[in-house]
Image (cartoon, rainbow, N blue to C red; front, side):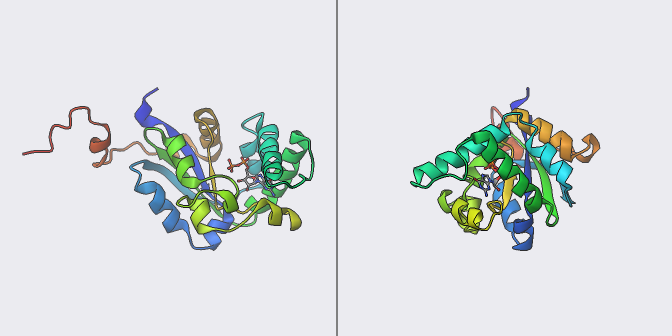
Length: 200
Ligand code: GDP
């Protein structure tokens, strides 16, 4: 695979749109040097949301376990100690959250796209995401309060967690003709081997 063509899917979730953060979020990704190759406003269906999270067959177990670990790390009792059951509960709430209003779907491309986007996005729970990340800086939710209200953690963004998931998610959200291959002038400083052609 051409490392310059690594792709990742990003969704700005309904809370990001309602908070007026579309521009701020795109700005943060754009200035990394990654290239935006697809962008649209979508009102997702519950089916699309379910397909989206289940592109990774282990998603329920992984996200259920992650959530259980977060509870235990804070000395709290998780709503269920079974990862799969926790994952199912999370998915049901996610369907409600992501179908509540329009989302922005985007594809970003460039070297290390998946890792760079995840780093800037920050960890799942805004309360404990690092300062400087989108989730850490721009919102305030926690697992604890989301659970009291029986809703999903509102964390502004979805970002693919691996190259394999990204490929499946992009196929789900975009038709091939909706992604545009083009060159950015600024890319040469990121990718040219010899950096010749700068000095006159
Ligand atoms: P991500 O890759 O960081 O988005 O995390 P996951 O794929 O594990 O979870 C998907 C989404 O489900 C998150 O972005 C949250 O919106 C929501 N979510 C995850 N874990 C929990 C949880 O323990 N409780 C609640 N209420 N929502 C959760």
